Length: 325
Image (cartoon, rainbow, N blue to C red; front, side):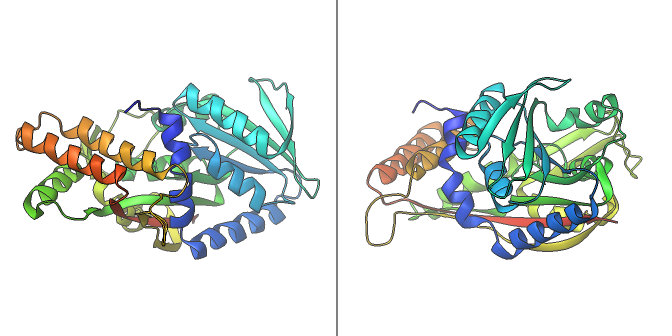
C-alpha cells in the first residue's frame, strides 16, 4: 500500500463525522457562540492544533455561520496545510490576503460574517514558545484539538491548552482514544489480543519536565509519563490540575464496516482500514514478543478481509469539552 498521510486524513473524515458525540459538539458550538457574544469588539479567536487537511475547520466555520472568526490552523506537516488551504477554499468563498506574518485567507460566511484563516506549520510542543514570541497578549478564546492531545503526555497538553486560552475560554477535544481496539471477526483470540495489547502499550509517552519551554507543572518530577491508550479518560481526570472544568464529555467510537445491505465500505474507509494496519505494522514489526511469521500472516489475513469487505474495526474514543476556570 502506498501510504499518504493527507489521503489517510481525508479518508477518516466520514469515520470521525459518524463518531463525534452530537451533544458534546452542540455544547461546544453553544459555548463558542456565547464567547463570541462577549467579544463585541473583535472576532472570536480559535486555534486548532493538529488541524490536518482542514475538515474539522470546515465543519466549525460552517456551523458557526454568522460569527466573525479569526481561525488559526496549526499542523506539523506542510503537505497537510497545503491540502487544508485548498479544501477550505473550495468549500467557502475566499480571497487570499496578505498579513504581517505570512499569507492568510479571508472567507465570507453565508450570513456575511468574515472569517480569517491562517495556516501555521508547528508542533504542539512548539506552541508555548511560539505564543510567547507572538507577545502572549492575545490569548485564544477556543482551542480545538482532535485526536492530538496524546502526542505529548496528557498533563503537558492540557497545561499548554490552558496557558494560551482566555480565562473563560474553552477547549474542544474530540476523538481521543481510550483503550479498546477490536478487529472482527476474530482470527485467533490469543494472537488478536497480543497484537492489540502491544499496540496499546506503544502509546506510552515519556518526557522530561523541562523539554517544553513555557510549560509550568505542579509536579517536581524530572520525568512525566502518560499512557496514550487512556488519553480520553485522562483528559477528564487531569483537567482540574490544568485549571479546567469539564463542561461535557461523551463517547465517540469508531465503527468501520461495510454499509448495511451492501458489501461496500463508505467513502474511502477501505483505505482508512489499510492505514490502521499500516500503523500497527510499523509499530510492531520486529517486536520481541511477536513471531515475525505469525504477525505477517495476521496482517495478510486482515488485508484479505478488507478486500473481501469482511473486516469490521471498532475503537473506543471520548470527546471532551473543557472550560477554563
